[in-house]
Length: 427
Image (cartoon, rainbow, N blue to C red; front, side):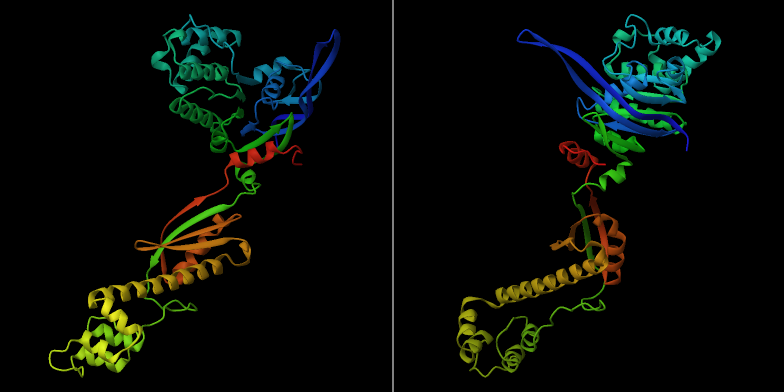
């Protein structure tokens, strides 16, 4: 595999003289320690770290702006110490806090000036200026003074300057810092397009969502050392956090048709008989309920079913009949039946989900709740989101239609906080 940038044991130590109580001593500040990087050609590589972690120091050493204390760095096949001029020809840099333009000149004049410094022939330069202005979307404002540009426009012009001599490697130090949402999104898209065209991009950023969105690989630097480097997806897997999978489903088969799953309890004989007359008579005999429902109760002339119920039933049944009318008793019975079915459904769904994940996620938790026309299932566990296809198939085979789902995974930000909060680097 061919690498665009490699470092071996790259180290930068600043020596600062301090005077305390009339005594002068030299203090060492270790900005970067034993840094080892391998960045492939055509890769969009992100370097992440808190303030003072060593990101900008690393960038400046690779750009030949700082001399390493020890170790080696090779950029595009050239050693940064032995072949600095060749390194500079191979890279385009966008650094923060730099006065990258002459504000009294227009964008076109700025690019013409820097193109001349790069040694680009005049006939080639004018066409190249037009190309890069199109790339960064400044063609219509190219002849305005830079002092009238917004922050986002100046940052885009800085990117145009970095790619003017068509270098194979771009080094971008927090390119979207200070930009509004729209400008940052536009610049990110430009960077992605440049990487897609074959350029190698080394990007430092504080914006972890940005790194997760655009980078093919990222490295986390902490206290001058690389603590971990991998793809954003692989780094998310290092998190101790849990996936949260939410699935909504509804029944697509009659209750009791699922194979191997318990069915809701059917109504008792007396309940069925009672429902035939539109009234719930739970707790009385089937024969008595049938007589009431058919209008053949043994009471005297004009005696209603309720009066007959009070006459033939005692205890709790008598008290309940006196307190509630037929319609209210029917509603109570219906609610009780629905609750029983819902409870049974929840158990069925939970059983199906646990069956789907099996031994692959023994410590996951499953919660099922009733929602309007269906049920909501919340499953929490390590990498449980990967089990959604199996869960969906198992629910479907069990007589349930999946109507929606949502996945929440640990974010790169969560992993970053875990890694940079620990004192010991992850090997």
